[in-house]
Every structure is written in C-alpha cells, then in structure tokens.
Length: 120
Image (cartoon, rainbow, N blue to C red; front, side, top):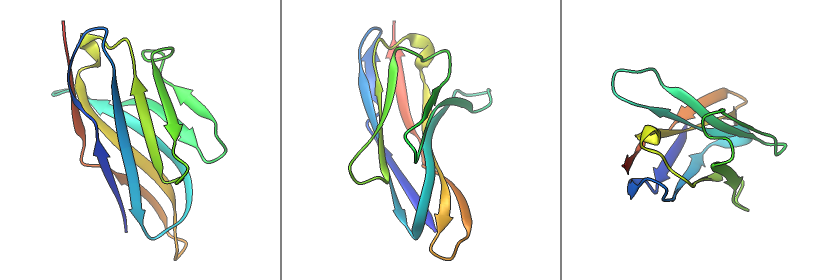
C-alpha cells in the first residue's frame, strides 16, 4: 500500500504564491509519475500537472508559466510552486502517484487533499 501526504495549502491574496508538498511512502518499487489535480465543489477533478520518472512535465494550459512542479532528492517527494495565483485557482489540490509496489502490483494513489484559497 502506498500513502501520500500533502501539505502547504492555505489562504493567499491574488498575485501571491504558495508551495505544496507531497510525500509518498509505503511499498514502492518504482515510481512512474507523480502529479497534481484540483477540484472545486460540484465540478470534476481537474488535471494540473504531472512529472514522470524521466523528468518530463506536462502542465495544464491554465497553469502554464505560473506553476512549477519539482522533485526532491528523495524521489518520492514532489513540490508544486504556485506563483501569480488567481481566484480561479481556488480548489482542493490532490497529489497523485502511479507506479509499482515491491510485489509488482500497479498502484495509483491519492493524497487526502489540501485546500488552496485565493482571495481577490
């Protein structure tokens, strides 16, 4: 079983910055990718960005140029630096990780979510 723990959400004014963190733990053999999604009440969860094990990134158009995903030296930890935040970035942000466990079982795990609120 793989667990993800997120931190770093909060309240910020428009134009401000926040950094989210996500640490994965458990029986991880390989980590194929880690990424972030977000969700507002009444809407579907929305893709934000993904970072693959090879270092490739893919950002949603809505966050390009403002958000940056990076990986810690401990490769099962990722960060999401969010700059120039807008009120429409307000959402619960979820970390996602995909890979294989030590028993070669494929996993796709989610964190508990962290609230990001951007005031205008």
